[in-house]
Image 1 (tube, one colour):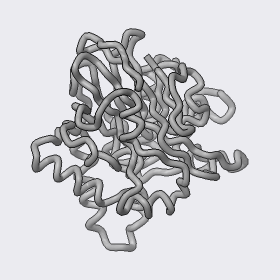
Image 2: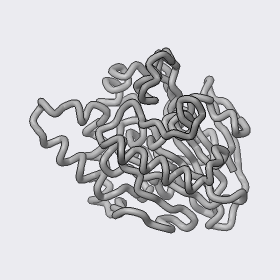
Image 3: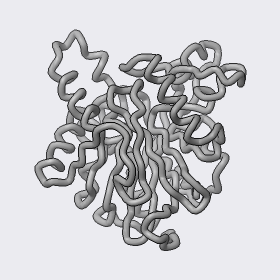
Image 4: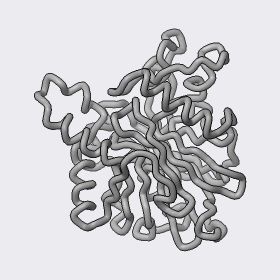
Length: 283
């Protein structure tokens, strides 16, 4: 069981926890225009950050329970381990997670919030309300909610009833000390990316603003931003979000955590492996 150092309550120690892989995901669904790039087994991950007495997650994966089973089958995700198991491998109990900062409400990012009963959830107000609106549309608009598990929205409302839901409006500093969020719309209507203060500077967790480094570097490494291959917002909003991230990291990909990283987080130090799923230390 891994233990990590105690930080000062504002400077964070960050780990990437891989928890699932899809099979034969067409790259063109991730990087717009990558029609000749074939398919990959796409990794899924979330972040655990620790500082002082606080243990926070940035996103939290999904559970293969209820609708989660159906969604995993629909998107071809046979390889999976419980996110709770991965957190516990770091020496942290689910009930000791103090906060979950959610980039957006898609099933693979928000699908286990009910497993962290003491955590304050931090989500953009526009993200939550937009999904309620989209769920209410006639079935012919079902494309918009393909990647949503409605049970996750119900779980967020349960947290609201318990006064454990913080709805953020736009950019905000110190939603948790040393943790900042920035609007990153495009993939969804209210996505946010997350900035954490660390001993080696500010680290950005992209959510699904970025699927792969190529979104930022361009098809030919020419610096021309490439939109995602999927999303319900506009390409224009996606590109603006990519630009915001690129400016925040100063073009340094070592300061960016991509949760579906095609390169399998090779920039970071692997510190553990649980049943084939790896844990990396970022800072």
